[in-house]
Structures are given as structure tokens and as C-alpha cells.
Length: 192
Image 1 (cartoon, rainbow, N blue to C red):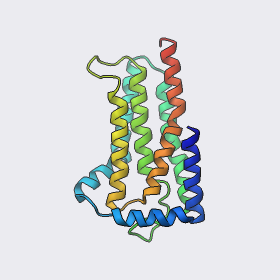
Image 2 (tube, one colour):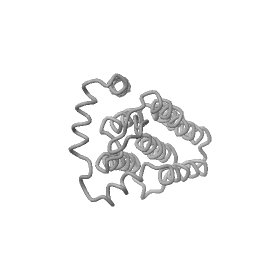
Image 3 (cartoon, one colour):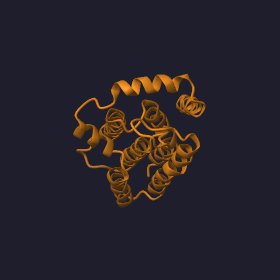
């Protein structure tokens, strides 16, 4: 987690200071924009939207409550609430201009952070409670990683975000999820 936190800090500093990484990021981003089928990159981008990602988390919270978990669903909801509480002030503070637009407040990617936390928290909840035999332990975390990665790739390829916006949120997601992971491991160790 320390490495992810440090990388997030480095990227944030570079964006705030308009450092050399930003120029590299913009060159890379410009070479990637509008690559791939527009409908597919839009679909991938939408995976990080609240209307798509939040119902997945709500379903996982409901399932965990049904399976007897009480604290973990609350922790998952609080972790999700931390996303806008952290991302929105950072967007305002950095005021980074988005690609293909004059608008600002694009750093870090809220869609990517939403995807990382919603799908990641859902996976952690499913791992912490009794699950059906068909749901293998590896499936929820793999699905969370793939959905979060697809979101970020879609946002960059469609031209909604610079690559560093997405990378920063990929760093932020696991940091926000770490306390929930720890609580889930504790619950499993206590046999609850």
C-alpha cells in the first residue's frame, strides 16, 4: 500500500505542478484517443459510472447482510462514500483540463475510482461471507480487476481522461479498500 500511496502522491504532485510527467502523459494520451470501437470504449467507460457500479455494490452489501455480516457492509458503504469525499476536492484543487475539452477538474478519474471501490468492495464482501459452491474464491477479485481495468482503458481510449488520471485512481482504489480487506480477513479469522 505504501508504494501505491507514494505513486498516487507523485502523480498528484506532477499534475498540480504541471511537471514533466504531465507532458509525457498528454503525448501518450493523444496517441491513444479515439482508438478502438467507439461503442465498446463507451461501454467500458460506463462501467465506472454510479448507475452501473453502485447497484453491483448494493447487491453485494445486501447479499453480505443476508449471509449474516453486519459490520462489513457498513464498512463497504463508508469506503464507497470516501470516493467522492476524496476525489471531488482533488479535482477542484488540481483543476486539470480534460482531453478533447476546455473543461477542467478531470484529475483523478472519478469513474475509475468508483469502479475500483465498488467492484473491489463487492469482491471483498463476497470473499468474507459464505458463498454458493459455484462461486469460486478467485472469481470476485478477478472480475473486480477486469471491470476496473476495462473502465480505465475505455476512459482513455474514448478521450474522456488522460492516462495519469486513470493510473492515479487505480492507485487510490486499493488504498481505500485496504481497511475493508483487513476487516474481512479479521472476520474470517474469527470464524464469523
